[in-house]
Image (tube, rainbow, N blue to C red; front, side, top):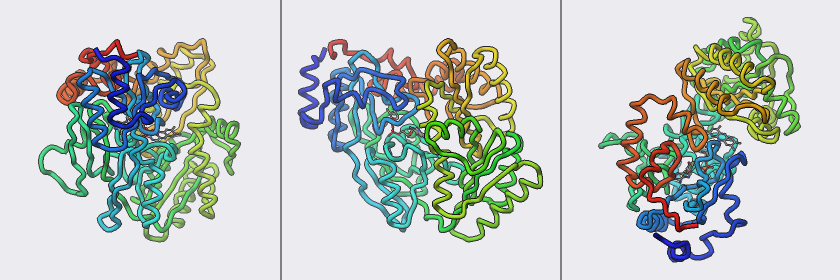
Length: 474
Ligand SMILES: Cc1cc2nc3c(=O)[nH]c(=O)nc-3n(C[C@H](O)[C@H](O)[C@H](O)COP(=O)(O)OP(=O)(O)OC[C@H]3O[C@@H](n4cnc5c(N)ncnc54)[C@H](O)[C@@H]3O)c2cc1C
């Protein structure tokens, strides 16, 4: 058994005393999630400055049987970076490891430490006329390590893929404290297993990402942004098919925003859309190195009006106007948080079954949670909706989650499209995942982290069974 004093003193020996946070005041920002719905009690927060220090911390905690919760910018929406309430888990924050090690504009790669802020890396790439194509509204705080650990999606997945598709190499500290260096700047590498994939989206449960090589793309010289109101969800889906036809691979975003979402944005962020009418709105973006996009977008609009799918629409006349249209979409999550408590469902369903999913979920919710509000928005082009229920205190939250997720599974979808399982969705995943998925996950976890040292309780709660919890650390 390790005493708290011994633990803190050994950690201070690795990182220096000022980088081991122990008071409730100092650890508070690391103990509550972005939504302010989950608060844990860390044994302490440790802030290493190098991969060698991360490795030493992992070895120390492993030898003492103390669990580690990795944390980046703490913007995750599933409470994956928050410790439990036992006071026995160490939060390992990567926020001092922010170096951009290299940026190669010809090879189109950037090598960066895990604690670097996404926005900073994007700005650095932009300064060299390159783009890091991971666009999320939390980019000002989210870190490269967190984005990788959650396999973040975002606004441009349609064009560039998820973080998984943009990650070329990783450096990872494993649960035994060894360092796997796979920082290769290669597009093609079929030599053996592609082990970096095991860590992308593993939410800190298999290893600690300390650095990464990410793929860059050229900055599109031309872009077009349009906001349209559509007559129905079916119309939105038909319009998506039409836009793919007209704009092709240059279609970089096709976002759905419900009228309810815009109402929240209007009330809490004081932003109003320049068009009205309709229950659903589409924010469409095209981006390309070649000209002609505006004509293509106007063609989409004209075809949409002709087919009766589009009720009203506006194409941005300037970059400033495009940013105003995007602000409507980017403020939805924050406006919802300001409105009050909500149950988030980050679901994906194939576009073919989306309408049936919405009908089934809504019909069941009307009975089970009368008066609940819905905030539905998301990445329609990816089949990914944020189906968030604004519940009342008398509603059964567990029942609401089950209703939404049962409808998702019935229509062949996923209960976590991009936010991960964290703490929020573990029970539901265990309830709904195929047995073979759970078996494989358990095999991987046991092979890479046999003692359940890393982020116990996230993804696989039965990893707790293997954890040597140190009750003396509190
Ligand atoms: C306003 C807003 C908008 C958002 N929009 C999107 C969106 O469009 N798409 C999307 O996918 N997400 C979105 N998110 C969610 C969130 O921003 C992403 O999940 C982001 O990737 C989290 O990064 P982070 O550094 O904050 O990670 P954290 O919240 O600190 O951690 C998230 C998870 O990763 C683990 N982790 C963190 N760093 C490491 C590391 N170095 N090594 C191993 N594990 C680690 C943690 O243990 C935790 O399980 C949004 C969040 C907000 C608040």
